Amino acid sequence: MNRKEKLKFVENFLVEYGLPADEAIELAAESVEEGQPIVETICFQMVAESVLACIHTSGWIRARSKSDGDEGELLKRLLHSGAAPKDLAIFARMMQREYLSNLGCVLDGAGFSGTPEVPCDFRIYTIDENGSPLIALDELHESLGWSDLKTEMKLSRLKT
Image (cartoon, rainbow, N blue to C red; front, side, top):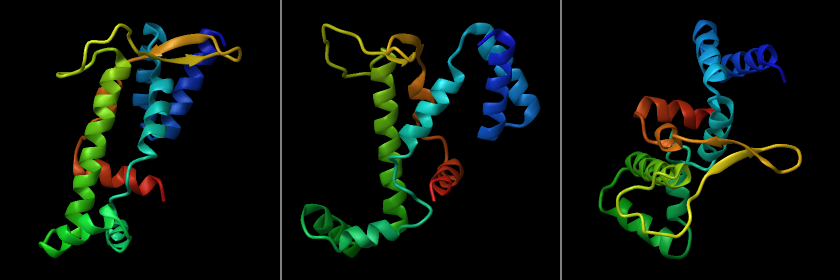
């Protein structure tokens, strides 16, 4: 794909992702010019977010509190102690975001406080049709961290 085709592809992707056209054009130009993997990073973020619990409804908290085993018992105790299902769902989402953000730090190669010393680094690369690495994704921890409740509610609704 030549530069012009790449630019148009990134612009279209960003508009479909929800950015206003003028922002998409500006961000696409910057991304293509600097070789930033914006499309790849957003795609990874979309996949990672798909594993997060939906928080626009707390029904899953109530349903899991009825299950057998440790998980159900824990949720029963929390609900019985007065915790609101809605608050538990938001707390679960916050902890999932924290985990994803920390995992993003590991995958960025940046690590975080308390990361053990290991003899190798980790990176995520997009690959070509032959499985060869093309471009490294970075700064994942920033895009995967908790932003605010309004954004989290919006993102959770995108999955339904």
